[in-house]
Every structure is written in structure tokens, then in C-alpha cells.
Length: 200
Image (cartoon, rainbow, N blue to C red):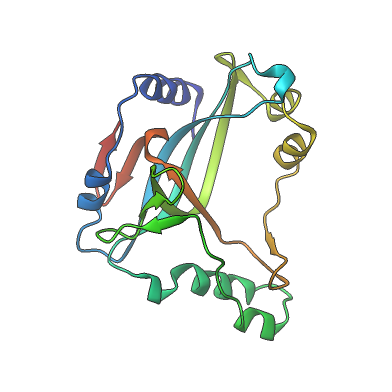
């Protein structure tokens, strides 16, 4: 569980602007198909325009699943969604017919969990989130979600305060709990994977 001191250290590391590299991640995932890792990330929270001078940071400690020598044909995400959706009251045909929608990133040829944004060319970590907890800071002072919500747009505040445990896929009309994220490498300050500690 992330504590205040760890979160503050993460922000300090993020401010130093060093980065865990794609090469480090690929090396750590070498000779493995699927593995688990813990990552700590620091991201800026976008405020409503009238609060643009307020700095809000989110520090997240997460357990994730990473992939290396798999390929698009293995349909990692689609298979995980189908397994998850089978646990809920979904129409069996809808689950069976689920296909992943096109993403705006391309998987790296050397490591499936490294992706490149098709529009910005930024490099990101593709990970399935299994568990996470976060601490927020407003102008470097720890804050609650309710305090953060005050500075957000109405829709962003609603999403923050009403976190759901399931995802509704309207295209296929199913619910599942598979959370995939592509995190910019510069936002990852620490990663522990396969008994290796990678630091920013």
C-alpha cells in the first residue's frame, strides 16, 4: 500500500525527469511471455480551465500484468475480456463475438508491452492493471478525491468520485473487469519485475 513518504519520493523522482527506458523494460522481460510487475507512476491531473494554475498530481502504485514474446495474433486482450465477461450476466453470443477495437498505438516488435503512440510517437508501457491505489496532491499538499474533484470539469469529477469496478463495452453489449492502460514511460518512476528493480 502506497504511503505518503513513498508518494512524495515518487514525485521527487518524477521531477528529476529521468526515465525508465524501453530497452530496460525489454531486457527485464526477456525470455518470458507473461509476467507480473509492480509499478509506481506519477501523472498530472488535468483541471478545469478556470483552475489551470492549480497543480494536481496523482501517484499510483499498481500491480500489473506485462507481456513480452506474444504477438497480436494471440489476442491477449480479447481473450482476457472473454474470460472476464463469462463471469458476469452477459449474453454468451456477445461474449463469443467480442473483438478488440483498433488502438492508437503500435506494439513494439521486440516487446509486446512496449507500445508507440501512432499520433505522437511517444513510447508507453502496455499493461493490464490488476490492483492499484493512488494518492493525490494539490500544489504539493496531499488531498482527498473530493478535494481534487472541486478543480475538475463536471464529467471528470464524476468519473473520479464514482469509480466503477466493471467496464461496459457498448459496442459488444458486455461488461467485464479487464483494465488495460498505456502509460507514458516518463511517468513511470519505479518498476519491480522478475526480481529486478528499475528506477527512474
